[in-house]
Length: 354
Ligand SMILES: Cc1ncc(COP(=O)(O)O)c(C=O)c1O
Image 1 (cartoon, rainbow, N blue to C red):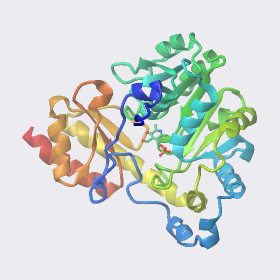
Image 2 (tube, rainbow, N blue to C red):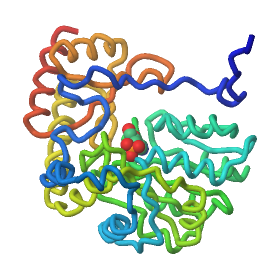
Image 3 (cartoon, helix red, strand yellow):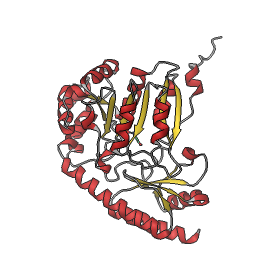
């Protein structure tokens, strides 16, 4: 009798990560930091316009790469299109980390850095955000002395909302030596700042952007990784030539053609974020400053009741206790003005009862 094959040791050792993706269609989805209204006008039309050849053929990348490079103000040789940021994280790990190498993360943060690093058999070293959820610059600088292969940073960071100040990032890059510094700007549109312009100055800098958040294409999986041409070529060398679908390319190009819609959505979310923050302050709920389209709150022992109470009202938010090792932290995505008014009314009604 044959025996069931054993997964690699690194796979057996991975921490499980299964986000609650199922059954979300009917609710007000404030749980995954997606765009809450859908993609810009023109995207669904572009998808409907795909023909039999588009579907039967493997994708052609060059035109979309040129268009998206122009959108982000870089040359096509500085860009690698990826199946979401997720694929870019995977690619960076596969390109730079051998089994046993150290990969540095700053936690709590996006879980997929650890996921791919652990899967590759790298040793994950984590430094923590400060108690006030500020960026722990001195701890990061100290950890860089061990010369990890990759340092993963998100700015704004998920779930904390923390932004890394340009001076802090400069200090990190200055100290990084041969470490690859991966700056994930999945929420960059909402923070209004970007490190993208720095890739020509720093041979070890990777910056990523995604179409999943501000541009509403999370279901299609499209992102882009940016680096100077040498680094981008090394990453491109290790990248699957098939990873991004024709549908994702068509949708991203259509979204790029309607930047006005993205700008308007982002502006509305930023105003709604201020409205939510004011509402939380009125209720006396502890919150953390956020540069993203979400706000992290600390409601202590009321977290489970709050998440369940909102769910009963059709509003999904995300309990982030797994990031902190104890209950209390809840992450709330910010959507449009009417959606945020509905959320704040629900919070007011629930908070009166706790
Ligand atoms: C910091 C961060 N990076 C990346 C992603 C995922 O991006 P993508 O959909 O492009 O893979 C998320 C999603 O929650 C995120 O919070």
